Image 1 (cartoon, rainbow, N blue to C red):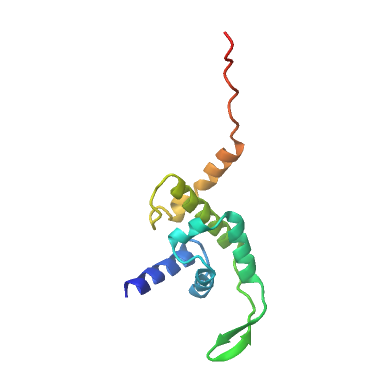
Image 2 (spheres, helix red, strand yellow):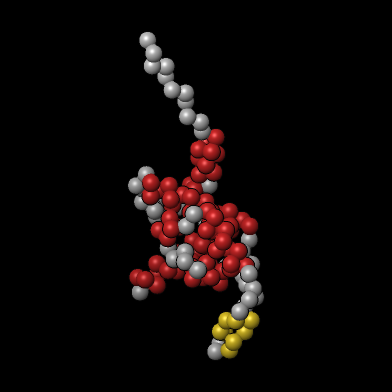
Length: 134
């Protein structure tokens, strides 16, 4: 019961916060390896792009109601990819600074500010060494 509730909460997170679109798309993302909030830390941003590209790609067959049907792929929006990448970045950051990865810390209203942090880190330059000669 608790596992089902946790899964449903995570699927709603993917649908609402990550903008997956609907629960079917959220389930596809989940079955591809993003199984809970902590699992975002297992992905680099490039991995998220690869995961979404793979989901978008049609091919093979799937079983629906005990019948084999062609897999047409899943339409993952650009907004969803952007948000999933930010989820991955935030989860990895939280691991580095030893902060909990929970629904409050991973809410979009919080993690959208990691975009600014990424820019600051990207533009950072180390200061020059101090002159040691006297």
